[in-house]
Each structure stands twice: as C-alpha cells, then as structure tokens.
Amino acid sequence: MAYIELINLRKEYVERRTTRRSNDDHETKGDKLIVLDGIDLECEEGELVCILGPSGCGKSTMLRLIAGFDVPTSGKILMHGDQVRKPCPESVFVFQQDGLLPWMTVWENMELGLNHIDTEEEKSERINEYIELVELTGFENNYPYQLSGGMKRRAELARALVVNPEMLMMDEPFTGLDFLTHMKMREEVVNMHEFIGKTMIMITHFIDDALTMADRVVVLSERPTKVKMVHKLDVQRPRNIEKDPVLRELRDEIYLMLGVSYVV
Image 1 (tube, rainbow, N blue to C red):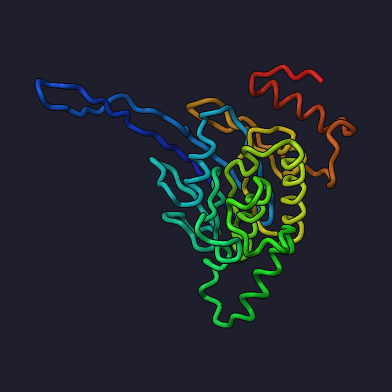
Image 2 (image 1 turned 90 degrees about the vertical axis):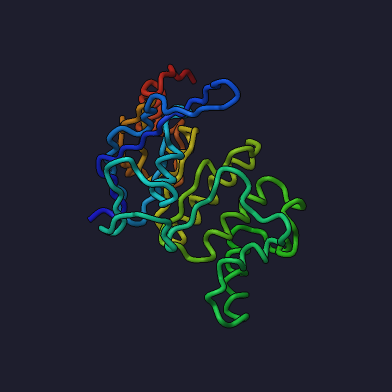
C-alpha cells in the first residue's frame, strides 16, 4: 500500500463576478476554473518527492490538499489508507514565505510544537539536536530579523523537524535565497532526509533541484492540470547532473515537457 495516494483528484473554483445595479453591488457566479483535473499519484513511505510544473498550474493547491488545508471537488487523498479530510498532526507544512513568528526567538519558535513533552530536559535535548542538525548553534536566542535568509530557512526546517513528523511538506522552500545559500540548503535538505528517513514532498520550480534531490520526480501539465510524468530516480547521491548522461537526458526531456528547449 502506498503511503500517500491521490485518486482521480479534481479541484475547481467558481469565479465570482461583482456587478453594480443602481446603488447596490450584486455578486453572481461566473465560469468554473478547473485547477486539478483527475490527478492519480502514489508516494512511498520515506521517499523525497519533488513536484515540478508551470507557474500557476496548481502545484501549491495540490500540496495544500494533501496537507488537508483544503478539500477536493472530487476524488480523494489517502494517507496510510485513510482518507485525508483535515490537517493531520503527523504532518508538518513549510510555507513558501517566512513562517517564523517574529516576536519569538529561534528557540521559542521551535518550542511551540513541543508542549506535549513534560520535562524541560527532554525538550531542551530535542531542540538542541535539531539546532545542531541545521548548524544554528549559537543563534538559539536570536530573533528572525537577526538572521540571514538562509538561516531563517534552516530555522524553519528545524522547527518542522523537531516535532518528529511522519511527513514534511515544503512549498518552494528555497524561494528568495541567493545562489550559494540555495545550493547549501539543497544539500542540507538531502542530508536531513537521509538522516531522519521521513517522507518529504517538495514543490519546486528548479529542475536541477528535483534531479539532485528526489527519489521520485513528478511533472505536472499546464492548467487544467494532469500528471505528465512520474519518474523514480535510482541514482546514488550525491548526484552530478553534468557528469551523469542519464540525468542530463532526463533534464532535457523535462525542459521540453515544460515547453523550454534547454541549451547548456
């Protein structure tokens, strides 16, 4: 049984139009906007899955549905065989924008999800473990505004991981980072995945990120969105796309699939 299973998943919205009649505004229903149109997808437990697709195709919508933040128009999502109907406490979502609470220190942000731990000693050990994992030792008492963009992202990952989730969902976690920080964060996420062995689903715009990181790459079409490709990568890490002809060929195929002729 797949860990996550999407079965004929469909999501549509009804556009609403506001018209003015004399002194009153009148709202009417407009056309249906189909975002996801029959998505079938399976993810295995412990996999790192990267989802690619054109801008606006519904990648984030699909991730929010998997997280239980929204409900599908039709079809269903199964986790461990049970239908997802609401946010699951075993799953943690890392949003595209900064999610740290600005009035709390890094330590206090991480402590938020550990109210179930009774002893301060156990709580401190857990927080220190993940502070060290993301290389933020010495910055525990800093506020978000005192951190660089990369450090904020690492702190968000540490906050997500400290609660020991069964699944981690990340919506473009490297957005806004400079090139070197992006590369370092990519390496850190791969290392963390191999260390903790949890299921991770990540939305990304970067094909090289997906090919470097993922156990499974999913490519979505333009809206109304369908699955164009699911490719399982049996390539040992660390990966070097330029030196691996299989990865180079797959990269070119994905670029063409997304409407871009890739030239080195």
